[in-house]
Image (cartoon, rainbow, N blue to C red; front, side, top):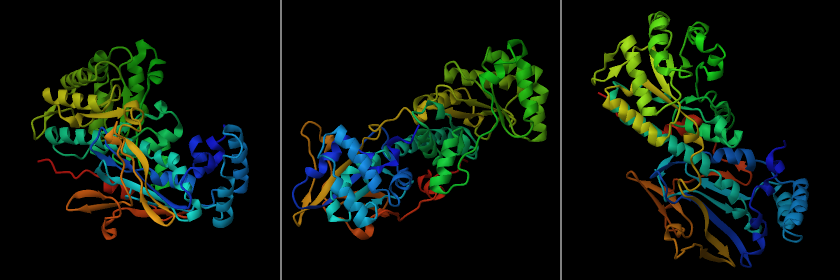
Length: 472
């Protein structure tokens, strides 16, 4: 199947926008728009993903006469003849060599700031292309997805930090405490790549190969995430129920060094933990500790997550013993851990960790894997993302453009040219051109077909990092 829209930037919009060049007032020269999270589930937003869109769709001579001809044929059939702005697009080819005459200023990727603040602005740099600013809205707004996943992933991280701080001696294991298991549940590989990379802004654990390739190709990170050998039910169940212990033994012998994860609930998770791992294979499991080669990670994959995790820990603790850390919480031996990858969401994560704490278990014993709850259970309204025009230059006059619907004042938009200022730990979006340009945190990232700022993944991670207080 060919790439959607044949890589033609003229197609990456909504149908009705094709007619908008005819709808602006006469002598419009500039259209200036902005993007923001105007509310939402999480009070702070992590900005991430615009650079991918710019590199993939905007950089270089992206408009050609061949693409214009293709678009004209489609739009004449789709909307009717005479609607498509053929003249405007040909102007871009002839005047700008097919490069888009727009300027985009954005907050640095990885920045964490309260919602209701401007995140990026867009304006045309050629007065003949005033219509282009909002023609590009559709693809630019799709930054909502990686931005929202990065925001959600960071919210997961805050919960994990809370319980590690309360029940663990340190936060050393934090980067690998939440793994992305979501690739197969995504609507497309592009979604998996974008969402998976957004998660890796906050963590280093992933099973989504597309995400590490995304971070490598678009953000200059040679390796953004890590995984380990792990089983699935097919590789365990083909041994047969009567040979489940042999399937488990095979995992230990095939992967004698490093962390290895084994799904253990194919038939009877309690028996698997107590009799198989805890008795028949106990010497092999303990040998990993003697050799210091990395833990066996037992994976339950069914049942009520809070109840199941605590019962698995209890059975393993009875068989292998436990120690108390400096905060008085139980720890399995270092060669044995648990990963819970079933039923994980922002809500259930906190419930599992709270139930563990109530039963005296340190959060250090467990890591988590999250699929749909991380990459799919979000939408544009999670953080109420919107792109609105706030300023225009019409017939030589400045016009503050805004909407203020009486039926929903939450959709009231901002007015005029905007700046994003940061002072004494506070963020402020100023409107109507009243801000101080010297304090503006928005930087030019794209102009007239060229990427001006190329953020690295390490820079983004540093900006998004939660300031940690060492446990004592």
